[in-house]
Length: 424
Image (cartoon, rainbow, N blue to C red; front, top):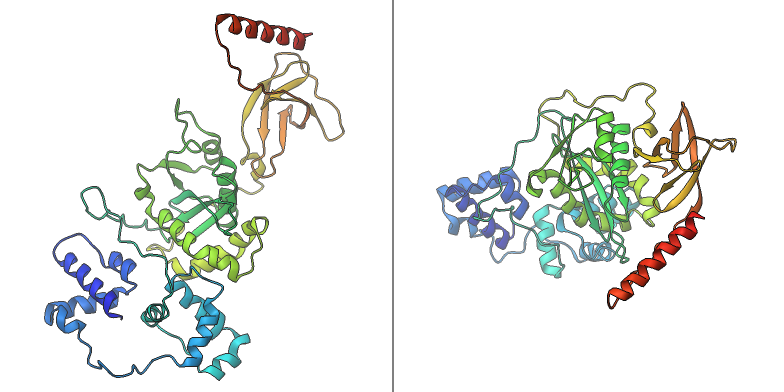
């Protein structure tokens, strides 16, 4: 325990004793100390006082666990590719990639490398002048009171918290959004999906990973973004309809702090993931989604998730034979004109796999779907699927400026002429 961190821990413990509402978990986030260490410090604070706890009996002597020059050289070389790594993350890299790596066994023996504690690495960072992403105090409200942490739900699958966080994960100037789902009971990552921006398709693809790998959770806890909740009339959004088909209840949070578990995981991802993309050799966004769900989520869960209080699971297995493409798709309708439909300023005709065109009377309302995974657009009618084939696009005119009423009248006349020409 370095002196500065110990002093900060004692200050927070004194605030806790004074009724500030701070928990051992809150202090652990700031200082890196375990609950057991904090309880021991709290007891010593009562019995001996802060001054005695800060005095060190071996002052002036070389610590018995001081690093050798060889060990420091190894650690400097190990640190070089990871300029923004946190102390805890760098310790994980050292343990996993060096100490426990059979390929580095010769180096471990040659340089006398041994596992080191978190406090040892904290002191190493201070001596070497290495920067670690700043640790933050627990969130507080406008009055300065800590946000109370809701106890986790007892069973896995009772609630999946979801959120999107844009970040420049590869440091190449392209911030992509990670659509993330975290289980409320275990804090385990259920699934994730990266896309260029936060959108319905990103959440749909993330939820497909969740239900395929774990089953359907009883509820999804989300914010009030338009992906989840229609702002104008409160009607179900496309994502809400997908969740309804799976029997999943949508719950809307009143504030970001209410979704504390997924919000904190977003911060963890921003601190750890860029370093681990370099560490594990992920080349770009075209590789990241399968790697994240197949390897990285289980890797994080082994480190940070914990067992729920109740071992029973509330995840529901998917019905046998369920076609997920019939779930993760948009549901809209269009009116046919001349055996074609207009969608997104483009005109489409409908054809089956053999190229036969769908012929329907003008004014027929057709069910139009876009697959959220493959982005295929199609019409379902009479038990058959008809692919939508683009045949023409509509030019979008640019802005026009008018100086007076005469200019406006001339512009409107031109627009009417264009309309008549299109009708002919």
